[in-house]
Picture 1: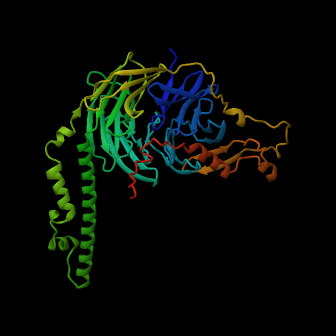
Picture 2: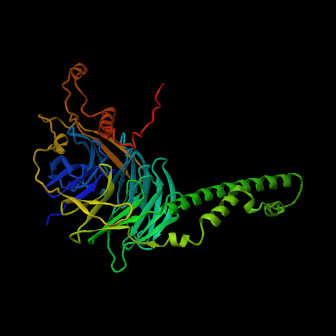
Length: 489
């Protein structure tokens, strides 16, 4: 059986299907509406495909050039730019602000609008799986230890290092953020326990038990669009869906607020102590900082931060918290026809109905019903065969613009060269290559005269913006919330 590499985009409206013979992109418009929108022969041995939401921007990594990231506008058949890295690219993550490239021992953060490198995280623990997760609000999580499940959160927007979380005793195998970026779900190599953490303070919010008898490898871990469910698939014949406890999330967020208030109160105390000590020395009183603090103590519960912390501890963190942190079982399940295959899951709304999508490496897309009230076994609604032949679709050869050669041989001193931009980081360099532009035969182009041999940075910027911009969806209430307009008399 031929293996197909399946991958959803960020909002689960599109699916890429990669095989040894070709690459195809599908749009998911409904239960019975899965349409092929792009296809090409896999002559370059593509191994990584990522599409930015429902835009025209697609990034590719091939086996022929494993350290090269290709960016293209697939609807206009245009190569935008190629980015070269010091070693093999293992993983690529994108949102509307950032593009993350994960190597074995470094992570590079780009501004997706112009592909300028903003920061490089160097000398990380060897990450041979290229494991990392990027939230929609640009929180980045990645493992920092090979022997345990310890991870670090990095703010890719503000370029600041965040907290470290020891999620598991064994190395990590899966990471994912909730759509809001408030929660982080993790799974270890054993695959029996899945944990959910609060991103603000690293507190464990919930713990789920996937199984007991056998250890498996988690292939897909993803939150529902609303963040209220978590779906996990593995190499077994069962897909599990867990329900996120909203009260536990609220408790964790309140505790994070209390910790911030307590920290501010502690800083205020230190400032008061320093002022008191300085005044005492100025008047000739020989007292240490500790004695000055004991002379005018402030009871912990008397300050606002202390009172808030005590209230949260007494009212919102009773003995039942142990039950919240206990290992919960699956809320819903799906029984697959065959085990041993890699399955990628998505829990999203299709035509305003919540559906569980399972893309299997056998080349099929399964759509299941999902009952948010009762859970239980999910009913199979539709099956789509995505192994079809390449016909009546757009064909694109990525190497056409790159492999273009001049008609007459030129001396080495006059040979036109592609525009190369070197972006230096701490210990590595990223090379951005702008492919030769297509000739402009328009009236304005003729007036401007002959173009430069290489695409300018402004032209690359326009191409990126054109590829990133997505068509507006008038039915999407998240982008266009309903507005009540009062009628005039």
